[in-house]
Length: 636
Image (tube, rainbow, N blue to C red; front, side, top):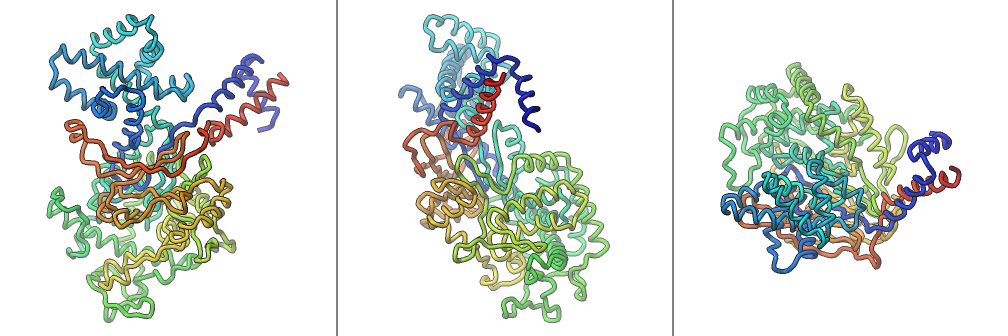
C-alpha cells in the first residue's frame, strides 16, 4: 500500500484533526501502562482437565490476586473455586443452603467478585476492560464496577444486585464475573508445542484454545504430525493412527473427529495376531479398556507399524537429500534368518510379524494397502472439525516466536558439539539456525495449502520434522521405533540428543542464539519438548536464567519420570516466575474439597522497573501507529 493511500485511510477513519489528537493521547497513555501477564504452557499432550484447570486458575495468578485485594477474614480458597468452576460450585451451594441463605450468598459473592474485577482491571484501559466483559451483562457489570466504591450510590449499587437475584439471574452473572476475572488475570497465552497425542482429549483442548481471548502456538513435533496428516502425508496419517492405538486413544479419531478407521481395523484383524510388545500403554489401574479393545489396539498398532516402515522406506529412497538411508529399516533386514545389522552389529529380530511384506521389495505397498491409505486420507481430509482445528494451528502457530524479548521454541536449534549451527542441505542450499526454522515454516505452509499433493518436498519435510536429525522439533540423531519394537537389546533403543540439549546450559550459547534471532541478550529462551526430571535433581532453569524448560509432565505417562504434573511460566510487569504443578485430581475434588493444584513458584527474572506496554511487541506496533498519527496530525 502506498503512503498516500495509507494516510488517506487514516483520514477517513478519524475524520477530524481533533479525533487524531485524541487517539495520539490515548496511545501515549496506553504505552505507559504495565504490561499484561503472559502465561506459558507446553506439552499438554491431550490432558484436557489438567490443562483447563491451569487456565482457569492462571497457574495460581487468580489466588494471588484474591490475596492482594481482599481481607484476611475472607475464605480465599472458597472464592477461588467459585471463580474456577462457577456453575458447579453454585450447584453445590444450592444443595447445602436454604433459599434465604442462598440469596445472601449470591449478594456477598457478587460484591466480592466485582471488587476483584476492579482490582484486576487496574492496569488496563476502560476500553479493553469493556471488550473483556460478556455481552449479556456488560452494561450491568460496568455499572457495578463504576459504583462499587462510590458511597453516595450505595443504595443504587445494592438495588442492582437485589433485582438480579430477584429475577433469578445471579448464577448467570456470577458465571460471567468469574470468566471476566480469569480473562483479566491472564492477558495472553503462549502454547509452546505438543497439544496432541498420548492423552485422551486434544480435540477438547483445541476447542478451548479457539475460544480463548488471546493465544499463540509454537508447533511441537506431535502437532506437526496432525498438520501433516491433513496436508496429505500418508506416512503421518499412519504414524498418527499407530500412536493413537499405542496409547488407547483411537476414540479421539473416531468420535472426536469422525474419522472412519474400519478399513485399517479390518485389515489389521485379517493379517495379525496379538503380540505382547504391542500391548497398548495404559496407566496402572486403568480398567476402562476391555480385553476386546486391547486386542484391537494391539493389532492396529502392529499393522500401522509395518505400513509406517514401508512408507518411510519409500520416502527415504526418493529424498536422498534427507540423508536418512540408515533408517530404511525394512530394506536392511536379512529375511533369511530374521536379523538386521545396525552399526556393524547383527541383531536377531523378535516379534517380527510381516504377513504383507514382499521380501524382494519390502517397501512396496500391496493393492489392498494402497486402497486403505487412500480411504484414510479422504477421511482425514473430509473431517470438518479436524480441518477447523488444523486451520487454527496454522493461523496461530509457527515454528518459533520472538515475543517481548524472548524466544519461544518447542524443541531446539540444531547445534554441533562446538556450538556452531548444524545445517541441512536441500536443493543445493544450506540452511541453519534461524534460516533453517524459517525454511521449515515456509514449506509447512506450502504443503498445507496444497493437500492434494502427497509426496512433494514440502509434505515430505513435514515427516522430516517428526524424525529428522536436523529437525528443530525432534532434536535427536534418529527415532528408534523399529528397534524398540523388534530388538531386545536396549542399547539399540537409545536416541542421542542433539548437542543443543547439553550446550543450552551455557550462557554464551544462549546469548549467541538470542542474537541470531535479533533478541536482546537479556532475553530468555523458553523450551518445551523434553520432560524435566526434577525428582532426579534436574533444574528447569538453565544458563543462569537465560533458558527455561517448561515440559514437566502434563502427560500422565511422564509423571513417574518427572515427579511433577507440568511446569508453566508467568511473565508480568515485575518479572518472570516458573510454576511447578502437582497432579490434578478431578473437578469433583476441587468443588467438594476445595482442592487446587499445588503450585510451587520460583523466580526466574526480576526487573528493576516495571515493564510497560511500550517495551512489548504490542507497544512497538502502537508506537508506530502513534508516529503515523502524529505525522497525519501535522499535515491534516
